[in-house]
Amino acid sequence: MDWKIELVPVPVTDVDRAKEFYTRVGFNADHDHRVNESLRFVQLTPPGSACSICIGEGITDKVPGSQEIQIVVPDAAEARKHLVEAGVDCTEVDPQAWGKFVHFKDPDGNSWALQELPPR
Image (cartoon, rainbow, N blue to C red; front, top):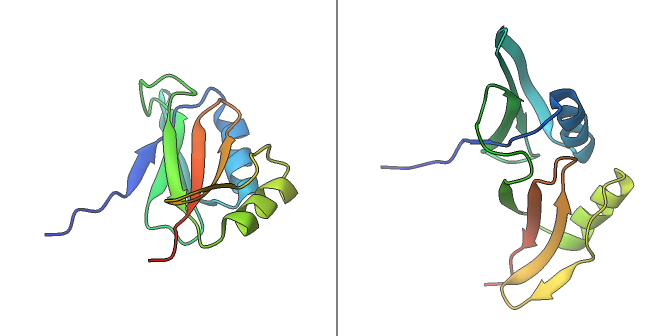
């Protein structure tokens, strides 16, 4: 039996600002649907990912800025270059024994780590 993570809620204060940020970074805007007055569901998927994030109104009780997510990328330096070109403040590439990392935060302070896996 396969268990696949498909959707991770990310708490934000301003849905439109967050949607603009994530699409500028390169996430695909899959859905943006107002279900009712208290529920807006926005699904965004990183390029090449089988797992999406969702933001919106009435999605999660988590505090904006409290989410931490890690994504595996083929090349940390290229990923960093892409972020910089998109106007995102990010760290330099941080080489570790378990991979190379680039860190950034969304406008609400939710933390992202991009990891280039080491050769196996």
